[in-house]
Image (cartoon, rainbow, N blue to C red; front, side, top):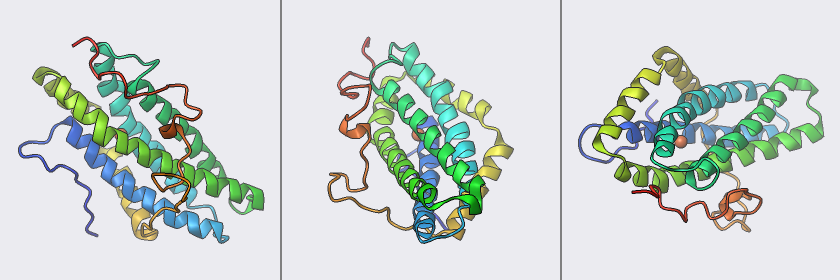
Length: 229
Ligand SMILES: [Fe+2]
């Protein structure tokens, strides 16, 4: 299977941000597989594969990928003066927490299997679409705003330390098996375009904090990424 999973278009060696963006590309492909499976689920398919989707999103998207962000990158930003209560880091942490709750709903539906009733199926379809939308917006904000700003604001020694800490964080065997699980899901459920909602300006049905409705963190990008520099 040939997939465009690497995002770097910059010349030279990859840095920690390229690593994170490469991980985004795989996560996006598996979100496409989740979109495809969600359509099957809506039409009455067995919810069991949601257990594998949940395993991938918990293991790879959250533990491996968000783990690097939270424990290493965001910690570096906080050390440079950024808040975990407001602004970009707070929004990213809020996204991660929302995602964990939605993945738990998907896992529970997968565990329920044949016992999932019609209402549960409907709620699960909504949770799956909400999760896909949440994560796509989250990735968009990181790729286009947070990462470029952070890459430009961190010192060369900070960037080298990020590379070292990412390498130490990576549990190669776990990451490789989770990556393989993601590729299997993509093969089993070839990605399809997400369901669209004409009332959403971005077009994928998101009604989360990208519109600032219901978000505890207002105007997340108004502050400079490095307020004290
Ligand atoms: Fe990310």
